[in-house]
Length: 140
Image 1 (cartoon, rainbow, N blue to C red):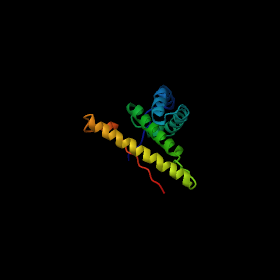
Image 2: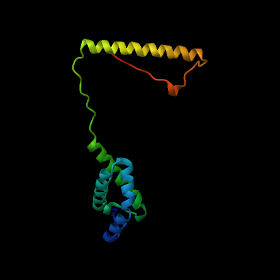
Image 3: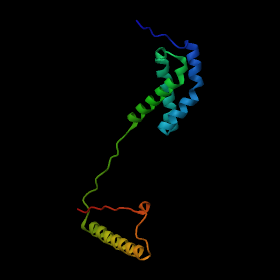
């Protein structure tokens, strides 16, 4: 039967963990993009690494093992802090607002058609894809 053996003694493991603290912070900050969240992640990584220290079989894989723990903790923290975007529905618009919106849309379409006519007369047969835009408006 295969038996797991510890790769480090507890004191050596603790020293190695403190030596990689800055590295864990940098990786956490890359994924979480906030200082407070990255610091919280460093604490969680230290806890999980200490708790799972006996599962590390080879000391040469310590940094890889710690990186994987860091990434998993960061992903878990991101999922926990995710809040879906809520959109508040506006009350029914009045006739005046809809009329103004339609007039504004009419002005936009007129300007757009003038720009297209000018671009075709100045020799621009095709607009660069990075300059194209599409406007979709819906009226009820």
